[in-house]
Every structure is written in structure tokens, then in C-alpha cells.
Amino acid sequence: MELPKFNARLFFAIVYSALGAAIFYIAGFPLPMLLGPMAGCLAAALAGARMEDAGQLGTFMRTFLGVAIGASVTPELLGRVPELALSLAFVPMLVVVLGCVGYPYFRRVAKFDSKTSYYASLPGGMQEMILFGAEEGANVRAVSLVHATRVLVIFAFVPFVATHYFGLDLDRPPGAPAKFLPWHETAIMVVSGFAGWQIARVLRMPGPSIIGPMILTAILSLSGIINSRPPLEMMLAAQFFIGLGVGVRYTGITPGELRIDVLAGLGYCVLASIACLALVFTVRNFLAADFLDVLLAFLPGGQAEMAMIAIIAGADVAYVVTHHLVRIFIVIIFGKLVAGFLK
Image (cartoon, rainbow, N blue to C red; front, side, top):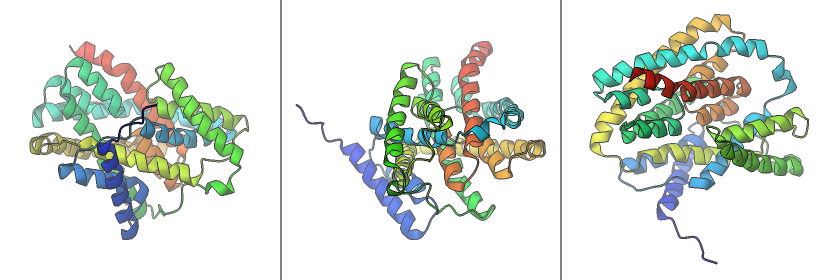
């Protein structure tokens, strides 16, 4: 049996992530296991380090987040369907607003071509936008860097707002240690995470590593088989590899890409955040949810990253995640249809 080859790029990505997490922890920064790996890999990439993400291992770790979301689906949540329906009705409006803000910005200010501008402006999943852009002949590297910057900036911005504006304590653990949970529930959650991922992958669902485990675990939660969230160790592992995955996106970045693509991504983050906040302040009086829940639900960050922050912040996880899933599904379903119409 041949042993797996040593992957130096992944090894150093893990080392830089661990250093970032340690520095954030010692400095007392919020979310050290989430933001630390992201910052460590980002700094290493800007310094010229060559890294890779964790591949299938990292994807498996993300299944723990899907399990945590699914475990938050309880019978009480089903009674809130009318409230969710009203709130979800504003998600298509958010997608249209962000697209109408982003496309002319990328075309006229950043000077991107039309295809690159279109897929850079859509607030969908990063992987799906890169794939769609590649199929249409867009500049895949520019699309990738814009969306990575969008996720990174909002990812770093939300903890600052949560601690300074809402006064939340983000240092509390996202779960109980495994030794305090029934061992059979922990085992079931690990199995449901892997099985849900594989089922969703076979069915070609978008974001299978999160959506599949989320659906399967929600069924187990509603049936009473699972009565707790994943243990602390699983959540910390998920945080670490999510942060690493965002940071390594900048590997191999050139000064030109930094000056053009990343700067364009930063400008889009400012415009998108202003548009999003305007929508949140407009619709919040129509919604019964707390302001923090509405803000986390409508900010166009990454689905996994926003879900993790919602869990740590003690927000309404099911409410937040449902909105991000609907946003991503809308972009995936209608994104290419609109692109064909615009041609």
C-alpha cells in the first residue's frame, strides 16, 4: 500500500493558520480559531507563500457546521414559518439591489469586461460563481479574488460590530466539550455529517458539504434522535478550516491583482454593505426578528462564515442560515438565466 505523499503547501497552510490562531488568542482578539487562520494565511499569501486548502479534509470539517445548523431546527421553528416567509420575501430584492449596484461599478470603475463584472457582482456562493464565470469565459481569477475579498471583509467586519455595537461576548465556546455530551449523539452527528455530504454530492446539490448534513441532521433533530449541538471540538475544527479556506484564496496573488482585483473587491464591499444596511433599516420594522438576526441574515457574506458567526454570537441560527440559503439558491437558479437574457 502506497503511503500518501507529503503535501508541503497544505502543511504550511496549516502552520500559518495555527500561528494566526495563536497570535489572535494571545492578543485577546475575538474568534481566534476562525479569524486567526484567515489572517495567518492571508499574511503568508501576501508575503509570497504558496499554499493549498485542505481539500477533502477541509470539506469534511465543514460538514460539522451543517450538522450544527441542522441541530438548531426544532419543532418550535416550524411554528415560525409565517414570520420566515415575510422576511424571506425581501431576499430577492437584496439580490437585485446588489447586482444593480455591483455590475455598473465593475464595468465603469474597475473596468472589468461584462462577463467578469456580472459574475463578480452576483452575491452567490464563491465556488458556484467561479464555476459559472469559467463556463461563460469570464476572468476566473478576478471573480475569485472579488468574492474572496467580499467574504473576508464582511467576515472580519461582523465580529467588530457584534462586540462594539451590540456588546456581545464572542469568546464564549460555541458548544459543550464532547465529554459532557452523550457519546452516541456525537457519533451520530459525525456519521450524519459525512452521509449527508455524500448524499447531497450525488444529488448535485449546491454547497453539499453544508446543505446535505444540515437537512439530514434537521430530520434527526425533529425526530428527537439528536437533542444537542455538536461538541466544542467539532466546532473549533470547523472554524479552523473555514478560516484557512478563506485565507488561502489569495495564494499566488500578484501586485497587479492586488491593485486591481482586490481593490475592486474592497470597493464593492463598501457599496454592497451600504445597500444592504439601507435595506435592513428599511425592512426591520416589518419583521419580528431581532436586529442582529436581520443584519446577519441579509449581509452578503459567505454562507458558512455567517452561519458560524451566528452560532458563536448566539443569534437565531435557523433564521440566519435560511436567508443565506435562499439567497444562494436564487443566484444559482436565476443567475445563468439572466446572463442568457442579457446576451
